Image (cartoon, rainbow, N blue to C red):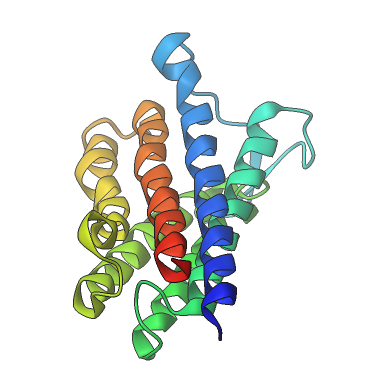
Length: 198
């Protein structure tokens, strides 16, 4: 694969992660500034561990926001997998499959909130921690860029899951703040693409 093709994939990853980051920020905005209340869509149990929303294609901003965000996450993970960055081309590259799977789970969560929304978040956190450790070992990305996957992966364990454990409810404001590390990963991918072709 030539450096020009690698740079294009890294730029696609950057755009995917910037879209994902903006999606999380848009999700959080009403909770930060408009005193929004977290509303779970009406749903019914299909199985004890599986719920289905009553309106499969609602005309709502939140539905399309989750859909577009999950597509951005998938594009980002797939593009990084194609070039083997920041993990390298060895077996650690397969950690990016965890991220692609979790992005698909996020996509499914628009219809089946339980179990796919919490499972998607958990898998993405674990997957990013694995990618982050691989990034530190491979040293393909330089400076602060190599730490961005690890920041994304650790964020839910530090800022989101403790809140869930203490209150029993998801923290929508913190979910929105998760967008900043995603934007940082998008910027890191874009800057890495410029390094390759310079």
